[in-house]
Image (cartoon, rainbow, N blue to C red):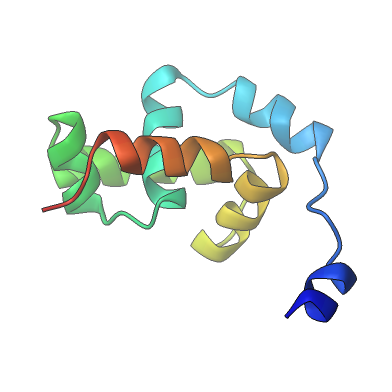
Length: 97
């Protein structure tokens, strides 16, 4: 295990991805954090007090603004910008149940 850990590269911080995330609205950022945390449209909507359809609209806008063609690509961009820590913080503040 220690041997494997030493060969893993530390995550890189993508400045351009961070700049794109900074241009998102606060609500779009909340939706993105929910997606990074593994949330569904329904669970993100419940947490934010909005409908799943509204989450879907915000999600589409986030993907457009981040120039991501798929959810996987969007998550890769978010993680490269350092959003993993934000998502884990959000998850711990709002446990699913």
